[in-house]
Length: 190
Image (cartoon, rainbow, N blue to C red; front, side, top):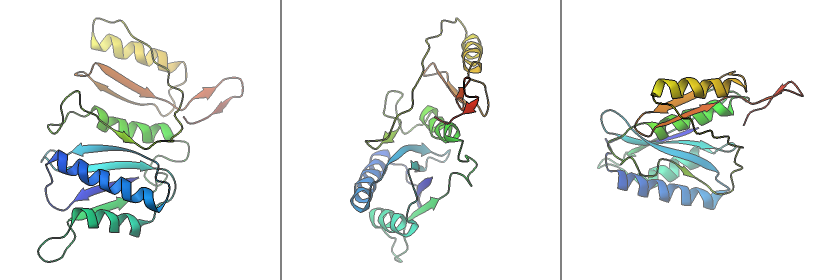
């Protein structure tokens, strides 16, 4: 997990997205850089990026690239910050890929002043293997009925470590569980 932030209160989405684009392009030159990223807007309006990456990353390389893109202040101090965390130590564990997906997904669903309802909500590199997704349209006259039906469906795969989010404006509920293979009695992450 990588979090790319600004020391100043960056509120310009277009500038932040340009910085992100330069960062991912430069990272790709150094090694294969597979990621899924989301932009988040804090209450005070500050923007930053949450990035789930594949494999170990060089902290010094990440910091130097992000710092060179964001720049320095009048005293020569970097205007950027970067936080790199091991997903296992961050609480996701080796079996918790669905938890990591939920962490990223919650920022996809979060309402933000910096983007419209129909604007792109996540960024992903090419070549990432995609898990099998199961979708069910749910006919319900109330949001509560839809959520109850969604959980009843998800329960068939066991609700071990279930992660979910619901966005009323988008009319979407997302639920992820660690899959359960009944024949082998083995849980496997997505």
